[in-house]
Length: 377
Image 1 (tube, one colour):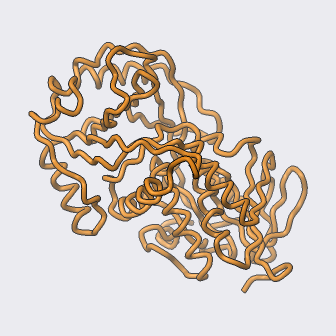
Image 2 (image 1 turned 180 degrees about the horizontal axis):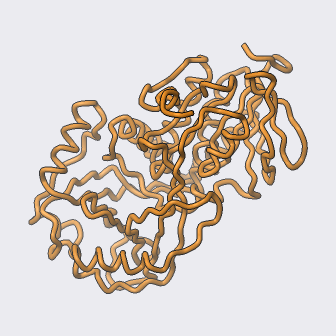
């Protein structure tokens, strides 16, 4: 057991986005922890957690992530409402692709117990019943998942933080980590712009800054990739039904969903950037137009009223990284959620809290940082 103060293990969670807040939410359910949730911004969720499409999508790969997505959706659906102060609109999803690709995807997830039981295949003739413009599309099949939908991300994040604070978690904003202090191989504390504070554990939920935070502590060197992605909003359009499912083309890589009387769209672009406020790349607008014109001609000339970008951060294998670091005792990773943070935050936080509580070497082996020990210097 690490050194403690007032019989509590002192924990610093760096990053008050969805990953960090969900970890605080779950860990605060267990006695014996004095938890500080720390963020460099003045508002939680300023970066990746506040710049996404807010979609809950369960049919994803790999299967380990799909299992977390399924568990998290059940929580979100059962908890959303007036008492929790966040909404979840389960209008469903359509995943477009070839029949062979979609069949292989569902077979793989089903074999590993990671497929929602409401998923069904639609043929080309059935697609227009879900979304009229798809009647003229190039797609031959789709997977329809009625329990997918759109969540109020700000409300979900606020729920995690509110419940965690009710259990004694300290929220500390506008505090930038300058250094992670060690005594030998063990975490000793955190130096911020407002001074030094001793901690027994540091939990790295810093999103795009996860690699920099790890470097401060001298941890295992994981080659993180922060990737920029753009989102677009059309402005209000005629005849857009707000209850339509979101549509994601997993073969040609674009998606859209109803938003504020219009459509929210994405070309699924990826470009590596530095952590921070990503610049906009106007050329992605043309990429989006080309994809829609080619695969859904009826939507090829949509107006664009607004565009913005966010960062999704990935480990090399694009799987989550949840667990204890190999090099530094007391340093814990909750990072690499990529584009799955909204859907999977609840399950990620639960997984992290269990490992922390049990002092286990790993939780799900697919997520363990140990997979990088032989690959990293």
